[in-house]
Image (cartoon, rainbow over the protein chains, first blue to last red):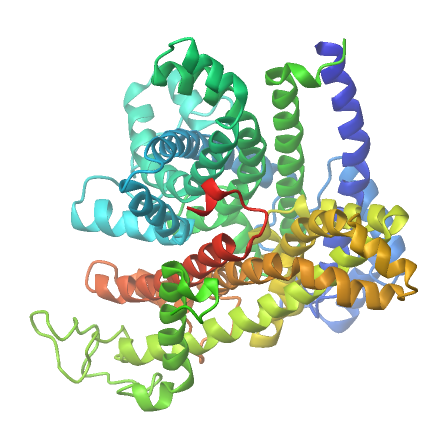
Length: 338
Length: 285
C-alpha cells in the first residue's frame, strides 16, 4: 500500500510543480500590471523624484517583466518574499505567524462540516420516499443558499448580539496572555498548561467554525445521499437484506462504507474551497489569520503580501488535494496495485 | 396544464422563477418602487428602526442607515447591481466555459490536455482568493466585477460540460453526421451542443446564484462597484459598524441576498430534475 501511495505522491508532485510555477507567474504578472509604483510606495511620501528613480533602479523595475519575474522567483525559492510595504516587516514571517490560525479555523470548520454533512446525508437518505423527504430536501437547498459570510453575520447577530452567549471578535479576550510555542494557539495553550486560555480560545472559535462548517455541509449531504441511492441499487445490499441483517447495519456497514468514497473526493474539493472561505469569516470575526492579512494588504496595495499570501493559499489547496487523494487510496482497496 | 412542458410544471421551477421575477421587477422599476432616492441622506433620522418597531417612521418602512439613507430604497436599488452581475457574469462564464469544453471534449488530444491543465491551475486557487486578486489587478467598477467573475467561474462550466461532451461525441449519430460530411463547426453547433443544453441551462441557473454571492463578497470587502452605487454587500459592510443599535440594517441585506440566491438555486434544482435525461427515476422523484 505504501508503494502505491509513494507512487501517487511522486506523480502528484510532478504535476504540482508546474502548476505552482504558472500560478506564481500569474500572481506576479497580474499584480505587476497594476498602476501602482512599488518604488514610490516603499519610500516616505516626501521622497524626491531622483530618490524614487534610484529606488526603481535598485528594485530592478526598469528590467523586462520576464526578467523581473525570474529575480522574484529566485528570491522566493530562497524563502525571501520581500518586505511588506505597509508593515515594514519580512513578509515570510508575517505569513508564518498568521497561517497557523487559519489552519486551525479551517480544520475545525471542516470537521464540523463533515459531521453535519454526513449526519444530514444519512437523514436525507433515511427519509427517502416518505412525505418528509420533500421538506428536508427543500431545507438542504435553503442551507445551500446561505454562503459562509451570511452565516457568520447571522450567528453574530443571534449568539453574539441578541443572546450575548459567545464573543465574536479576535482570538482571545483582551487581557488574556497568549503563549507561543508552535504558533497554533489551541495546541500552545494546552502545551503551556493553561486550560483557561484554551477555553477562552475555544469560545472565540466556536462561532467562526460553525459559520464555515454549516455553510459547507449541504453539498456533502446531497452528494452522500445520491451516492447512497446509487449504492443501494447494487446486489450486495439486496443480498444483505436476504441474510436478514437489520436496516441500520446495512446502512452503516454496507451502504455507507461504499458510498463514502465519492463523498470523500467531494470533501477534498470542498476543503479547498473552505480554506478560501476562511478569508471572509476571518474578516467578519476580526480573526487574526491569513485572510485578514490579505484584505489589509489589498486595502494598502501591499503587493509583496498579496503575492505571498496568494501563493500560500495555492500551496495549501494543492497539499489538501494530494492528501485527500492519498486517503482515497488508503480507504479504497480496489485502487491499490499488488 | 397538459400543454405546458414538463419543466414548467415543476413546483421548484415555478418557485424559483417567481422569486427571480420579483427581484427582477424591483431592479428594473427601482426608481418607481423605491420610496426615496437611495443616496439621499436625512441626517435628522439616522439609524431609525423599521416602521413597525418602537420609534419607527412610516416614511422609512425598513428604517434608515447610519447616514440617514432609506434602507428599503437601497435594497431595491441594490437588486440592480446584483442582477446585472448575475446575468452578465454567468452568461460570460457560460460562453467561455462552454466553448472551451466543447473544443476540449470534441477534439481531444493535445487541445484537451492543454485546456485541462489550465483548469488545474485555476482549481488550485480558492475562488474567493482568485477573484480578490483579479479585482486588485483590474480595479473596481461594475465591468471589472463581471469580468473577474467570468475569469474565475468559467472552470465550473468547463469541467462539468467537458465530460458530457465526451460522452455525446462518442454517440453514433455524431459519427453519422461526420460521415455525411458535416464540418466540425456544424457537428458541434447542430449535433453536440443541443444535447448538452439541458446541463448548460441548469449550471447557468446555479452560477447566477454564485455570482450574486461573489458580488456581495466583493462589495463587502470594498472591491466592487464603489461606494456611490448601492449594493447589498456594501450595505452589510456599513451596517456592521452599528450592529448593536440597528441590527435590522444588517438583517435586511442578508435576507435580500439569501432570497435571491435561494431563487436561483431552487430554479437550478428544479431544472436539473426535469431536464436531465440521464437522471434515474429515483433521483427525479
